[in-house]
Image 1 (spheres, rainbow, N blue to C red):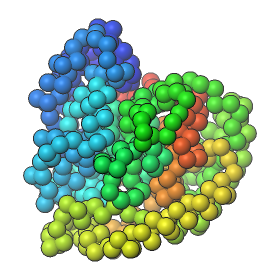
Image 2: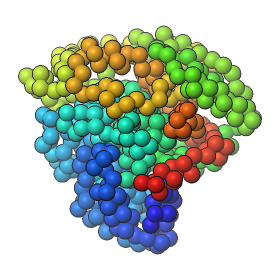
Image 3: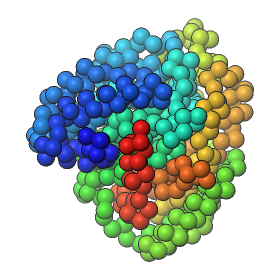
Length: 461
């Protein structure tokens, strides 16, 4: 069982399909591992053991079904799962039990995934994964360090082998940065690719999109097929994303960037980009040094990460009861007018068009984040707003600009910091060119493999 649990999600699903083990056995193994390890790591905030066992029992052993049937999965605690609380790590929402599934959760269920529970986030996804309600989430590689956020619980759960793969949301790097620091693949699709039509999905245009954190590129591709199945609301594509993995990306023009939009990066992060550039040249790609016109995107930064949330779940009268760093955030979202939001959307669109007009490469490579994993008390939940803003303002994120532009991006764990901890690098493509990113990422996975490092982590815990 330990050997099977060290496989990626596709490998585990294949084992279930071949009858080597049942989905119920795999689920029980993960639940036991959560019970043993998560009191220290604090990656899960809700574990639905009964629901997971019921779903796994319905899959059975060796039956045909969806490609990922039987895979143990987690949902970030910002999306509704029927019968479970959706707390956003806010004390005011501790008992906010969802009546039904969010649309993306329904797609994960339809894909045969077994939902183990919900993972830890900072309150309203605004910082490192620590909150007054749910406490500190800790890295499995070094429990004195934070996985950052906001999908920190998801990253820790996958890296520690507490689930096969995980759902996250990415509004400013919230999937890619935790994935980069925990040694995982983190995928943020093009804004609008994961679509649900006029009756479901977000009510407002926002920077946040559903994403996934996985052990392998093929897992990310398979889960993207689950999130964005062919249909009337999804852009057409010639083949499943899973079929792009291992495909020849051709000779690409790849830009290398080590200049962040703001802040100062650790030299190791820049060195890692240049080292990967040499690998890309050896693989036959054209590699050039570039610095995107970050300033062109600045007018688009005002677009909210999550539409009017958190004001749609917390009354304005209760704003003073959220964490100090978030009081003004709730108040601002509660008083934003439709006209203001419309103007932000138009500013975002204009900035994105101007930015893409200067996009001169097939793929851009950057650090995912310019800093290493910080201590768990680097940005605690009880910081006042000004102190929290000052702390976060210097964080050199290469991820956030592409939430503004809405481009697809994937973080791959191809480097290490001086302490030997994982360090991910980001690949960014043009809108709706996920296939190019997946082909290149899978090429790098062969050239700079990371699977053994993750297997050792899972086996060591």
